[in-house]
Structures are given as structure tokens and as C-alpha cells.
Image (cartoon, rainbow, N blue to C red; front, side):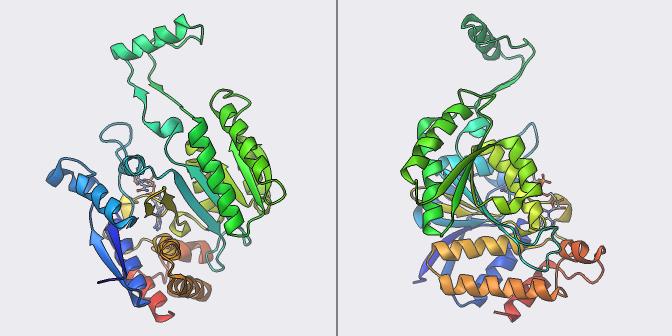
Length: 362
Ligand code: NAI
């Protein structure tokens, strides 16, 4: 029997190509993993009538560890995000996204080393929405007016932003525990509590209370989200661990990805009390589907996080070192890295050839 059984969700768009590259790199380390393939996404709709069949959730529940490629979500209409549904179904309340510089990516900054800890289950992403024109939306608008809570235009659509004590406590505590376990010095709680007094205000109150328990062990500060954006661009070295409610966490993770050379470089993990689902920050980049062009680094670094989680530290370190060597050499790299380094995509290699270059350095 394999030492680890991991659910593999290839996903949509570039997902199958980058997960194949990832899998080849992981297997080349000799680590003993059996992959249980359970696919989800737009392309399984026709077969199962849903983008997230129950057997996918069951497979992750059983194996407790999954790695996935990106999954397409139609904008505005159509089914809700598979990623959000998976995070909710398995209560994967942490979205952990490290952002660290690797020389050779051509990124604008060289010494980025921060970790984004994003709350994954509530806030504007809770999926509690009222469609414009529906009777229940009119009822809600009346309820708000009747309680003196404000006037909402009758032709509005409404998305609710619930933030709870429990949800805030456990994410902030995770950020502090992560900081302690990984030798990190500071946690920054990001919010807009000056405007959103009852949601972000509550989050900030809870964050301060949790922070007090760690006083003397991990430093704490809080920052308003807009100032945080400017700070990240001007002085990224000021940041260490950032803990954020869902929406800000989503946006700031892409900003952090930009600091380290783009979405093709940014790994991530969704973690709950029982299961963990590893996935890169980026989406399914549909325009690159099937072209053997996409950069699989984010997916491969996501596998590094997964291997650390599985206790396979040696394999994780070997892959990270091999990725660093290939990027530093700068010859066998994908189009995006070639372009940030030379201004042109000329000489770039494909997704699988890049994986081959990494395998050769293991
Ligand atoms: P995206 O991240 O797929 O792509 C934006 C652009 O970033 C691409 O056009 C490409 O230029 C670049 N890019 C992204 N990944 C890359 C890679 N590995 N290598 C090279 N270049 C890369 O974002 P977009 O276009 O907003 O979303 C496309 C679809 O992905 C949507 O349906 C969205 O809902 C979904 N999505 C899924 C996620 C997930 O499964 N976790 C996360 C984010 C978006």
C-alpha cells in the first residue's frame, strides 16, 4: 500500500497540464503517493449535472489531503464557485498563501517573504445573496428601512457580509500559531473597521483579544486595507504574516503574487480541522488551455506545501531547490518568466519541458 493516498483534482483550463507537470515532479522524488483522481469543474457538468460531484468531496474526506488545479467559475451567472463550495463543504477555514522571492523570476522585488492567511468561509464570500427584483429582496430592503438601518434603493441586488466571533477567532489564532511554529515575528491584521464597524470592527476586536494572548512571543499590528495595499508596494519588507477576512485576503494574495513575479509563481493551501486541499492562487487561464505554455511553478510549489504537510520534508526541499536552480539558470523557463526577464518570450520552453528541467535537477 502506498504511504500516502492523495485526492488529485486536475480541474479546468490549464489545470490538467500543470497538475500533470506537478505529478511528474513529485513522482520523480520517489515519494510514495497513490493519486486518487476525482475531477471537478466546468468540464464534468455534462456527465454529473454538477461541477462538484459528491464523490469528489467524499474522496477528500476519506484521504484528508487533496491537491487541485484551478477550476473555472462563470462570471456573474451560472454555477457558484466550486472552490468556494469545496472550502465550505469541508470547512477549510484557512487559505494560506506564502509569497517569497525566488531569484530568476524577473520580479520587481527581490526580498519578499510574507505569508497571507485568508479567512475562507465567511465575509462577502459566504454566498448569501439577494437578487435584484425578487420579492425576498424587497422584503429585506423593507426590513432594513423598518429597523432604521438605512435606505437601500429598490432596484438593488444585495450581498451580505457576515463576520462572526468564532470565524475571526479561529483564523487569527491560526495566524499566530503559524507564526510561532515557523519562526515568524509579526502578525498584521488587515481590515476596514473605520467604515465597517459591525463586521470588520468585530474582526478587529477579536484579533486584538487573540493577539494579547501571544504578547511577548509574536508582535501584532493592525492596518486598514487600503493603506496595506500602498504599504505592500512601497515597503513589502515591513510585512511578515498577514491575516485577513475573505475578500481582502483574495485581493491581497494576487497583489502579493505580483510582488514575486506573477500568478504563475504563487502557491496556496486550504486547511481545516480535518482536511487540507492544496491549490495555487491562480485560475484556469482559459486562453492558454492545451497549449503547453502555462507556468506550472505555482502548482509545483503548492505540491511542496503538500509534501511538508505530509511530513515529506526531504522531497519538499529537493523540489524547492530544483525549482530555484532552474529559475536561476533562466534557460528552460516558460513564456511568462522569459518575458519578465528578457522582455520577449523567445526561447521559452513549454510546461512539460520546464518540468523535465526541474526533474533533471532533483
Ligand atoms: P487566471 O489566474 O486564470 O488568469 C489571469 C492571467 O494570469 C492569465 O490570462 C495569464 O496571463 C496569467 N496566468 C495565470 N496563471 C498562469 C500560469 N500558471 N502560467 C502563466 N500565466 C498564468 O484568472 P482569471 O482569468 O481571472 O480566471 C479564469 C478562471 O479561473 C475563472 O473562471 C475564475 O473563476 C477561475 N479561478 C479559479 C481559481 C481556482 O480554481 N482556485 C482561482 C482564481 C480564478
